[in-house]
Amino acid sequence: MVKILQNDTSPEKILAAAKKVFLSKGMAGARMQDIADEAGINKALLHYYFKDKEKLFEMIFSDASKQFFPKIAEIIDSKANLFEKIEKFCREYIDMLQQNPYLPLFILNEVNAQPLNFKEKFWKNREPVFLKFSAQIDKEIKNKKIKPVNPAHLFVNMISMCIFPFIGKPLWMIVSGMDEIQFRYFIEQRKTEVAQFIIESIKK
Amino acid sequence: MVKILQNDTSPEKILAAAKKVFLSKGMAGARMQDIADEAGINKALLHYYFKDKEKLFEMIFSDASKQFFPKIAEIIDSKANLFEKIEKFCREYIDMLQQNPYLPLFILNEVNAQPLNFKEKFWKNREPVFLKFSAQIDKEIKNKKIKPVNPAHLFVNMISMCIFPFIGKPLWMIVSGMDEIQFRYFIEQRKTEVAQFIIESIKK
DNA sequence: ACCTTTATTAACCAATTGGTTAAACTGTAT
DNA sequence: ATACAGTTTAACCAATTGGTTAATAAAGGT
Image (cartoon, rainbow over all chains, first blue to last red):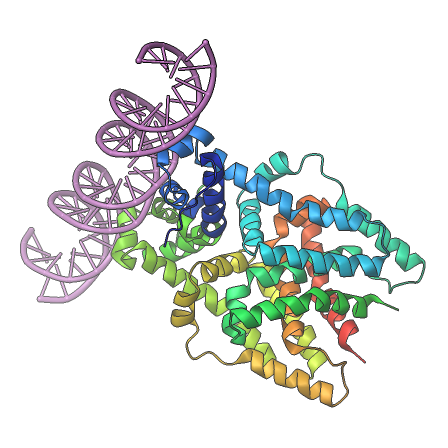
């Protein structure tokens, strides 16, 4: 079932189609013909506007990166106290992933496939977001606001619980017997459940 | 760098090579010629012993499933108390993943790509592992041993924190600046840290 | 109207890739 | 030695696929 996109310029149609195909099939599984069909245009136009598959993929990946990463830094940098930040992060990040459920698997597949390529092209001049987070945790520990926990594990735990359910969605639906509507509600709950779970664990 | 396997029968060499290639490249990215090279044999032998790419892939996937899933049920079913079970699960499951770090991304990519196919071929007659876990949680809540938590979220949280670090490994190494040795130590810590983090959150 | 540039397409091309074949090789039983 | 079954290989084949080309259509300026 190919849904042809209308009302946009050709490059826009191509990007929308490429995003859809690359995010669900990945670089290796995506077919240029499928992207052209999805966009409702001739395959040659893909090369006319974007040179080749790799360039088109990089375009999509770059876009996806901008959704996936800056959101984390943005909240870590904000001026809320720790618990508020944790709540805000879990709520907003899970919400963003709910609207882009294929993002995590897409990004992580590519980073795993070519870590060095990713580091050089997409991780130059990034803010040291984890160091900031870590520093704040250490401060809160020193001020006796939270138990002495390892910031690295806390950070990874939080990220894991936010992201993984989207990667494991179809498996979890099979295991739990949930349907689409129940899963949607389950994710809705997690927007507050995850932060609560974390805070319960680290609060004094 | 192709390392040719020796001392085994051809089918064994093929399976070992196929596992290596499929787990790191996935179905779409894997090449039959690469598998043959890795096994140090002629490509035609792949078809002689395993018919075609799909059959060979299913062989590997079936094997991987047997590592990935039964381990969960095994521990959930054991006769320990809840906290011991959580500790045992996190320790043993993370340990297993440490020895098979590509397993999660491999399994989850395939399940996401073809959920129905997975359900029919690999999830028939499985034990209702989540229901058992859920029942035990409800019992512990009723007996006032732990806070009233939602078993579904608890289960997904635990699985997420165990599995995700292996999917996000290269990204986390870039973000945190860890090298291989540090990451290994980080995982070693998580074998106890994750369970502790969970128990701190739910204990009364 | 006419020309020029840009956009779009059908047809085509070359490389890759999964899979086949027929011949050669290896070991074993007679 | 010979026959025979199972094993292995080089060469080949057909389909797929990323990418090109040359011709056509559309748009814009004069």
